[in-house]
Length: 227
Image (cartoon, rainbow, N blue to C red; front, side, top):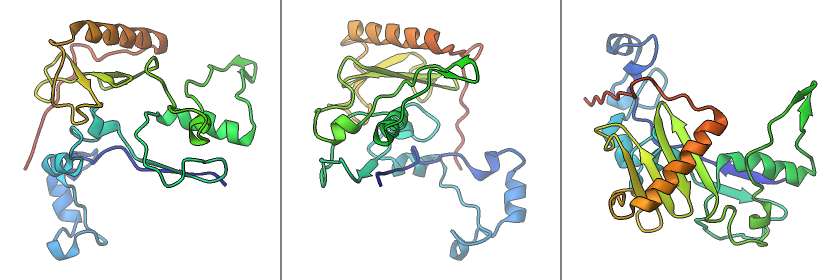
């Protein structure tokens, strides 16, 4: 049995009262949030934005954003064919690489057609050559991986990552980071290396066209609330 264990992505900054059908009055009426009952039956506890940011240190921000604190997760792989045992690695892989990994382990092929309809090819890459010790990376520096969520945008290629976040979380424009030197995404290199940023934006736009990304009209406004 090949075992893959990975965490959810990022600490949750959303207050319980922000979910559909709930208000602060509803939470107070239906919950026992006394300190001695926290984490027990009847409690509904949220850590809030400040503690979510702290929980993800040194990564930037939290779940729901395309910064490293919102998308980076640890992964543990164990089982037959895994040669890199007892090692902690920092190579980049993506959740969409899991499906082709399992297909390779099972000796199964990905269909090109189902019920008379064309099936889009799988976008991921098998991790098995890396796990077996036959390659030094899952994805090389030419591979570009893009994200989009609620109008927030990001692309990573090798050590470089470009992000677009609205103010006050970002500049309301593209920023550029070198994740090898700056995993916390604190040092914006957009003005230092504008050519690299332009290349990444171009790759993100190619991705956007290929998958049909539709950005929110007028941009996405983010309301920050902390109590």
